[in-house]
Image (cartoon, rainbow, N blue to C red; front, top):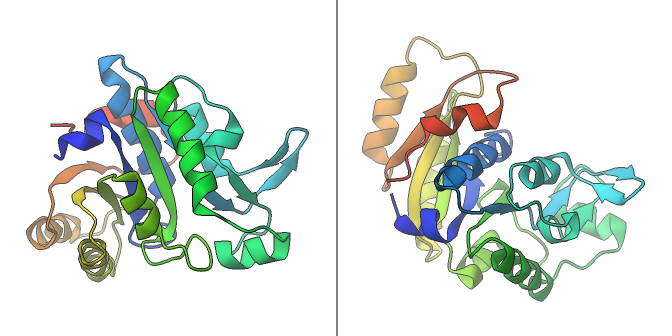
Length: 228
């Protein structure tokens, strides 16, 4: 595994929407914290938020905040909380918000100072889903100089999606530190064969496979991931 994931954090992307990025990210955060050192999560842009007495809040960002130690301010975890549950570009336009890279970098810097440099940054949708007009997820990953961890939603079609995503990550000049298999549905009869194909096809190590276990606590699955 790329040691930067352990020492500096990573940028988490997924094969597509519904691959389980957030769940895998929270498990990975708990795994990073096994040595007793701090690690915090960040969801730079989140669409699909609910109004609370403290402002707009996103379920995924709240999960990352809860898995973090120390617990950072929500505004740092999720600088852009967009109400509409749709693509960030559409949600930002509907909210009259301009998502800007300097704002994201400032929030990351503050989080990094709190966590000794160990920040896990979760992207949106799949790798090629833009964060904003003119702002790709690769732009942020490169600006932060973070290795990428790919979450593969294990289901029919995942081999194609995983290979395409890995190629895109590398083509964009980013480092692929490894991938996490996430059983987003009950495993079929060919589940083991799919994992073997993914291990052979992807240009990075498998960091672990998360089981299909609805309702499981992320902390209890941290041992499923290898940090070295």
